[in-house]
Structures are given as C-alpha cells and as structure tokens.
Amino acid sequence: MSAPVLTIDGPSGVGKGTVARVIAQQQGWHLLDSGAIYRAFALAVDARNIDVADEKALEEIAKNLDLAFKTHQDSELVSVYLDGKDVSSVLRTEQTGEMASRIASIGVVRSALLKRQQDFAVAPGLVADGRDMGTVVFQEAAFKVYLTASSAARSNRRLKQLQVQGHKGIMSQILAEVEARDARDSSRKHSPLKPAKDALIIDTTELSLDEVVAQVSALVKA
Ligand code: DC
Image 1 (spheres, rainbow, N blue to C red):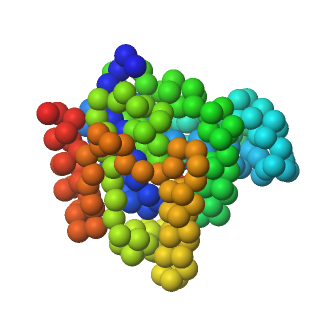
Image 2 (image 1 turned 120 degrees about the vertical axis):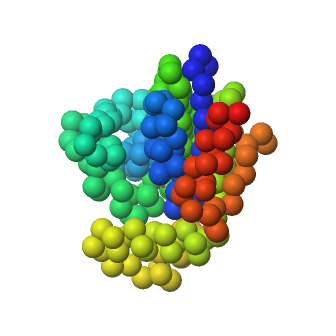
Image 3 (image 1 turned 180 degrees about the vertical axis):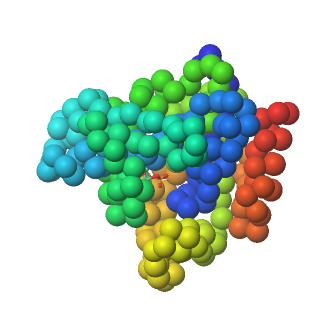
C-alpha cells in the first residue's frame, strides 16, 4: 500500500459513514464506502434474478460489476451508478442493506470484490469504512478504528434520521432489524465483523459526532 489508509469498521448505524466523510474531507483523502459496493452488488443480483446458490454466476456479476461513484460540489452526498443508472436512493434502504448483508456472507463474492476495494488506496490517502476494512481488506493500514455503540443508541439514531427525511419508523422494528443484521455480519464464516487487533475501539453510545471525530482525527495526526 503506497498511500496512508485509515480503516473505520463497526456495526450498522454506528455512524461510520459520517465520521469517514468528515475525516476524508479534513485530510483531503479519498473515501471508500465498502457497504455501498455490497449494496450495489445485491441490487445487481436482484435485477438479474440469479439464484444465490449459483456461486459461479455470483462471481461473474461481482467481477463485472459496472459501478461508479460521483461526488457533488454542492452536497456531501455521493451518487452511485449501477449499470449506468443512478441507484442512490434505493441503495440506502433497509431492504437493500438486508439483501447486502445476506449476500456478503458468501466467500466467492467477498474474494471477487476484494481488489476493487483495495484499488481505492491511492495518494494522497484513503478513509475506508465497512466491516472488514482493518481485518481483511487493508490489513496493513496505518490507522485503524472500530466504532461501536449499543444497539438501542444506534436504532435511535436511525429513527431520528428517518424522521428528518420525512419518513416514519417504529423503534421496536428498527431495533430488531439492527440486531438481526449485527448477528449475521458478526457470526459469518468469511470476514466477520470484529475489531482488528490493532484498532482503536471507540464506544460512541454517549459521544457526539464532534467528539468521535476529534478522537479519530487525533489518531491520524499523531
Ligand atoms: O455499511 P452498510 O450498512 O452499507 O453495509 C451493508 C451490508 O453490507 C452489511 O450489513 C454487511 C455488508 N458489508 C460487508 O459485509 N462488508 C463490508 N466491508 C461492508 C458491508
């Protein structure tokens, strides 16, 4: 790895994406939202009506995934294009997250998407967020962080996010979804969600975004 890499791993809804975006902006580094790759892959498989037991077909789709990220000057949102179509809004739904979580447990899928993720590590540096950034994809990263928070706190944040977007949500349902996804992502055989041995673990349950950013920023600058 020629460029410095900061990995940010953690369970769903912990705020990895927001922290990653702020630090990437501060440092002037590239950003890899690896969850978006798994989500886009799940959409591609869904659109092609592939049997998820057909590993050869899955591998083929993963290797040829026509995926592009587009940043905007006037917004912090990143648009995601799959097969030339803007899939940004459907990509972010809980249903897509659930599909991604299921399909991401398949070993051949992870192997086929590995290099695509590693290719993001170019100068001047990279902030990569996901589940296995520090343990598998960027094992040699200079800086590793693992964010955690209680499932209740994460569900509460998700509920507020939905409300801000004008949607309704039911706390008990969100909590059940968050816990089911955590259980699947942590217990799978291939690249399970867990902190890298050399990661700084930050429990964000009682912390504000600014406080988390300050800790991560201090690590990168140290
Ligand atoms: O971070 P996210 O919610 O966008 O990720 C969606 C799913 O993709 C997540 O539940 C598991 C999978 N994923 C993964 O297995 N490995 C990653 N590095 C990122 C995401």
